[in-house]
Length: 428
Ligand code: ACO
Image (cartoon, rainbow, N blue to C red; front, side, top):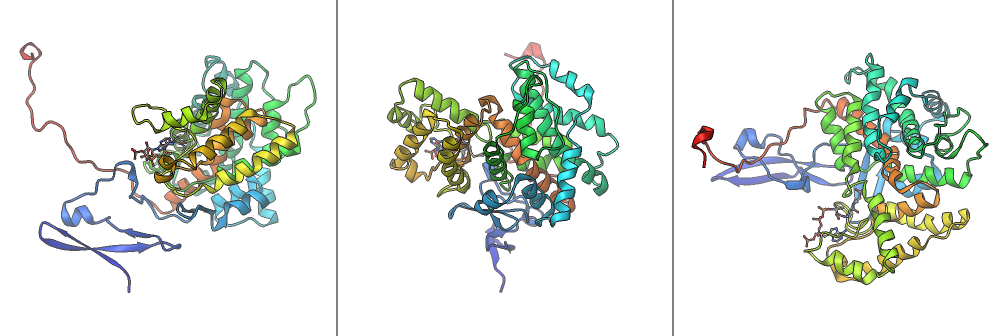
């Protein structure tokens, strides 16, 4: 017998259907609530609100489980590469050899951006944040594909998906090159997706540059771990923007802006800045703890806490485990890694963090790896964005396929009631 939810409002009983997910998660379907009762629900921050049914990613925040299309993130991080995982997220199944080769080719042959776009970079001030550049460049990219912007035309959408995946990587690397005054390095078709990015980031025209396989492997792993995370702030943004029939470029551009905030993807940059400040101040972990716990102090332990994970973030586990191995393979010694471990140890034996169930999230250790790879701190959130593109695309495509209605939350108005206009000379 299927569950039903009974609610009583103003003396009347209503029955609401209960939806059960593939992993036995339960939801009360309130889609007819307002129509039948005149009431809406109020849920600031949407902590209790499911906005959609989705087949892409499953998270169990209590058990620390994260799976893309049913496959555990730990397994993908170990066995897959970013291109294959992107295919999985977007198309729903692992590709066969032929499909994978075709997908790789598409990403390889759509990597260049229109030469005119190179001039756009010159318009930004030297200290422009690369997230601002990335977001505006993606939107600008749409102007070169004006005949492929119909969000309801599957053929057009399929033609721009590999272009977005491939060109954003080029734009990100170019924005870095421009920020340090070096000439841009064009993509090379003989390199893999991740190696090509590293080449565009670190090669210079005056000498040859071999991509270190350790860097390539680590980047694949980091991008896979960031690939999707169901209805987080940026993905929900991409879906809601797309629900207005805005094109895929515009929707992803909005997602990049949402990701930029330090409470979301911007936390990876904030973590390293926090660790640097604590390190420069003598490495006083106890003082950092004291400040993080003080409600009057706006300081938070960046990289700690998560809306969904109340046990541990499985991505953080994989990254932490990789830190020692990768740093040692690259011959890098970073005092910030020791500091991060000391902070984690201190926090996980402190009742404030234990009681509130605050554990390291994906951003706590990722910056240590990016630093060791030579990625500058301001680029960290861009790296997150590059990893998240397949997830954003997968959700956008799913939303279109399901023909979801335009996203439009309601509110409870608490402002002034009917008031007359007062001419300016009569106002006090
Ligand atoms: N340091 C200190 N206290 C914290 C922290 C932290 N990092 N995170 C949460 N808390 C406290 C809050 O002050 C709050 O305390 P209260 O109950 O006494 O008011 C309680 O824990 C619950 O926190 P909320 O902010 O209500 O939890 P929410 O689910 O809304 O926010 C968030 C989650 C935004 C991730 C939060 O934990 C945070 O700001 N963390 C630091 C930033 C960060 O690392 N963001 C990356 C998240 S992962 C990602 O987006 C990729």
